[in-house]
Length: 155
Image 1 (cartoon, rainbow, N blue to C red):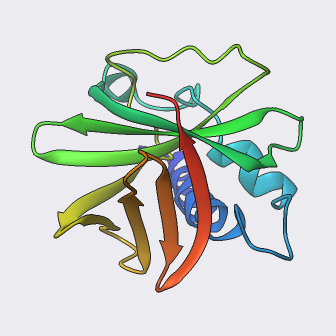
Image 2: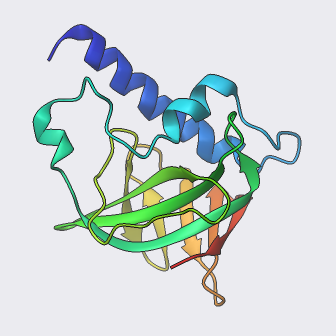
């Protein structure tokens, strides 16, 4: 792997964490320009190795975050994807009602691995990121004990 790809992947990982924290901050209804543009891409970067393009999983669920939009005005949703014993959450973008979900979505470079911990999921690389599904099916995203986003169930 060339050094530029490593840098790009690192930037994407940091962007996803930034997105999760910024997505429902009361002071910030619109996240930082560069981080959202990279974190919300629902395609594998053109410079990614060929084996990553074929890395797909099983769609578990999808939720719409109505509180924020990407810099280019697109809506943001999160999809949870399982592959084997691992589970990932990743941001995707869409316009209006044009969200297309795939039963076997690609696991993008910006996906964050999460693991089951009782009645919630916790970020593997960021244990303060907590994800819960409430009784109505909405996805609740926490930063530690602080609720930062309520995302409406799509699927």
